[in-house]
Amino acid sequence: FYVRKSGEQEWTLTEMYFAEAVPAAGENVTYEFMYITNENINSPVTEFTLCNNGEFIYLTGGGEITLIACSDENGTGTLRVPREIGGYTVTEMARDALSNTGYSEIILPDTLEKLGSNAIPWSAQLLLLPDSLTDIDEYALPNIGDTFVICCSRDSAAHRFITENNIGCILWLTGETGDINGDGEVDIRDFVRLKKLASAAESAGTDGGDLNSDGFTDAYDIALLRKYFLSTVYSIIKS
Image 1: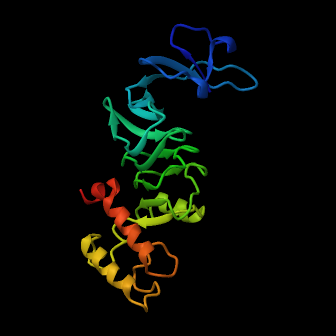
Image 2: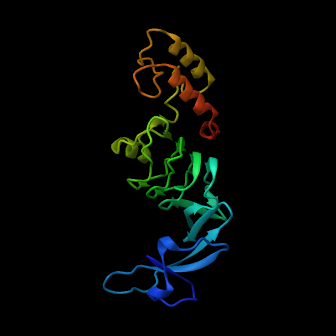
Image 3: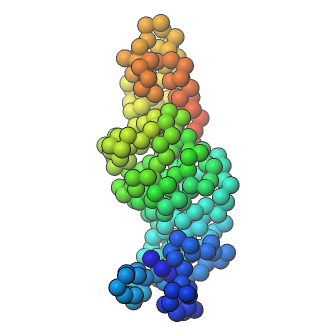
């Protein structure tokens, strides 16, 4: 795909940007884009606006938003991607959208449908994937291992993607993982129960407390549940 500023440039290769090299907008700029084949140059097919609201750089078009990048590439801590920006629904995160950031907790909105390649950074320690997410690029998620907790619903597209592609992470099924006492809630009572299980010499991971699936209920599981309680993800799920 190639793009040009609307009404300002000719559809020639010297006057257009390759779509991935569109400069970050200091202010909202409207572009048109088209698809170029080896045989011919087609007519423009649609128009979009490249925006920068100081937090995200994104494309608007058709009432929807595709997030391109964070305005602050040095961002760290928790990032909660909004459902809407300026009245437009956030439905897609483009390739490399967060790849250069340092966010450790990332909460994606329940409007998001598509996640592009390398959209999630390797700095991620906790990621909430919504049920609305149905199109996930095979390289969208980092394969970090047991320091990376991904929260999603059982049998969601995200759950299937993670298990089918053997993504290296601790999979936290919301509403299920961490419910040590089986009352349907993940709360402080589970934390108390888990500490008792972990202190029992005979505990061998068959009691529901083996949260990281290493075969034992121990201090590592306690640390994982504590991390979950202290996270932004937990407060969002509870609310």
